[in-house]
Length: 95
Image 1 (cartoon, rainbow, N blue to C red):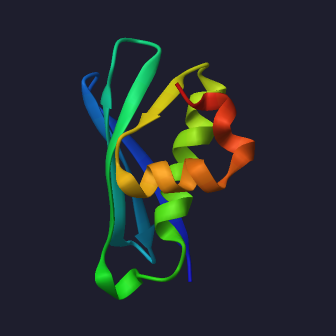
Image 2: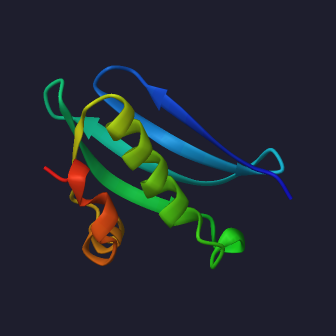
């Protein structure tokens, strides 16, 4: 089983998409809030891929992206907020 995460971004909005063996498995959408931060507004995983931790993988990918690019994250999505609440080591990118 192979998973891959890709980032799409049009400068206003974007998303991180996770694929399992080439099939769409879920996404986490975000909206830019200026040039130094972005808002995670939705995380969703297809039902057949539930329970595999893909939602958390998407959030962690956004954290990695934020760290590499010196950005901050505003997790308005309840799922993403829960991941930040439970994972102290990623709060350095929290706005």
